[in-house]
Amino acid sequence: MHSVEEATRAVVEGMTRLSTETIALQGGHGRILAADVFAGRNLPGFDNSAMDGYAARAAELPATLPVAFAVAAGDGLRAEAMPARHAARIFTGAPLPPGADTVVIQEDVSHEGEQVTLPAAAVGDNVRRAGEDIAIGELALRAGTRLGGAELGLLAALGFAQIAVVRAPRVALIATGDELVDVSTVPGPGQLVDSSAHALAAMIADAGARATYIGIARDDPMTMAALIASAFDHDVVITTGGVSVGDRDHVRAALTSAGVQLELWKVAMKPGKPFSFGMSGVVPVFGLPGNPVSTFTAFELFVRPALLALQGATVTQRPRAPVVLGRGYRKQAGRAHFLRAHVVRTQDQLIAHVHPKQGSAMLSSLIGCNALVELVAEMTDVLPDTVVPAILLEAV
Image (tube, rainbow, N blue to C red; front, side, top):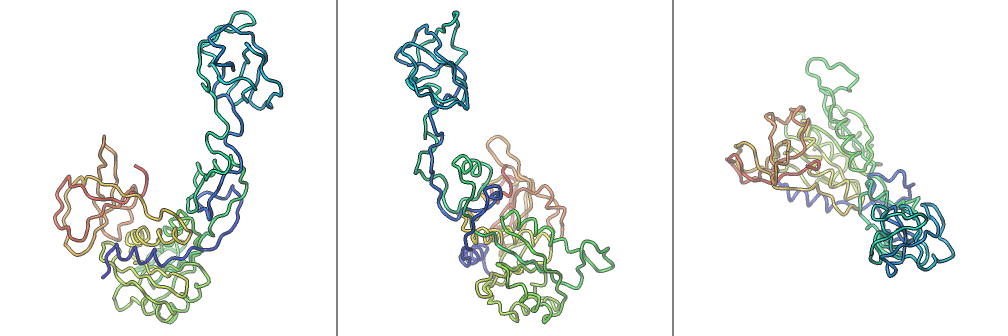
């Protein structure tokens, strides 16, 4: 069997970045930049006031000065300079008048008729300088950056109505097993709803890709192979179930019949041991286990990083952090265990509360799970309050 580290490396190194497309900025959430972005304008574009107050010349302060004019956000830059030994009423975001080099906030100013008394101030106080955030020609965002709200806001401020991103991978989902039925069907004795299709579709979307549900392949190697082969017009193919070694587990034979060159078969982990990975030409094919928690774990460890790598993401792995295991745990050596847990921050520590139900068919154990606690293969008896690594599925 392969170790988790070997399997992760083999999967991610097997990915080749997809082609580039140009999209509207509004559709950029979750997408990954295909090229470095350089600023074509200063941000901010002009010297402006950071506060409501009075613009003045620092060298003339402290002083009692007449107010020459007022300038508000949205006003254009005045052509004439502010007269010497004068102040100007100014509002947040308004362009700094020519000649002014400081802003005194209104709370520090006293009024005497048509004049204002200003305390001493330094050059640049409460002034936002043109280009102090990002200057023309400066690198704003690197290729491989995944776009969230902050990145989209920056791109908008710099005037990028369209952006070059890596094409979103098109992922074909194929379930396997005579026992499976669609969610719209009431399962009879011995039947199960194909729940993994819906979980995977959501997880695929979260990774910036697009899922297409091909359907359920019955337990017949030839039929299964034909359905798998029909999906090779996608960028990625994922099958669920049938990857173990039982008499009715036909996926391995079906993958081979469909022309998939298998690179991985079985990983030393729990849950998710019967995981497979191979290539059909340039199309990566993942065989995920059938139990829903095994499917979830294998996707998180292997498929999600692969989908991000296909998009050229700089970061493909979830963040990891040391956590304190709230209670003890016993396992056999030989396989890494990934425990569903809810991690909470207590002062300067992260405490992992492991779900009491750790069976690979226990869907309820995924509810509220924000971390996978990793117990490496060599571990056996883990004492309470032991510090172990965890994969953080959400910010804690």
